[in-house]
Image (cartoon, rainbow, N blue to C red):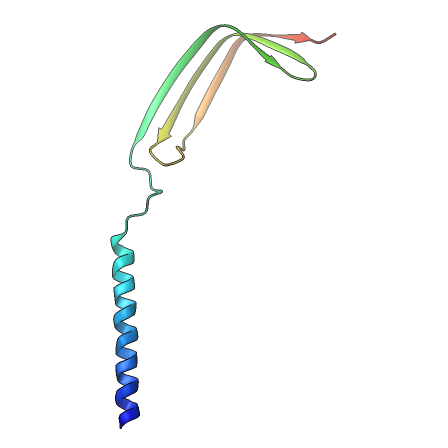
Length: 91
């Protein structure tokens, strides 16, 4: 009889501990979900030169659009458009 009450008391303690952990897990909000999204656009005009081993590329205009979430680090799509570019090969 004593073993049965000890087993009952032990299983009740495990049940209470499990319920407490489950309740505290539900109360915590995940921090990686996006809260808000902000859009941005931009343009740079002027001489931009990009260097590489095979040559340089000069562009006159760069424009971009994108969206950024409030995550840490911010996530989201980004698109850049290079215009009026020419290849300047290294001799």
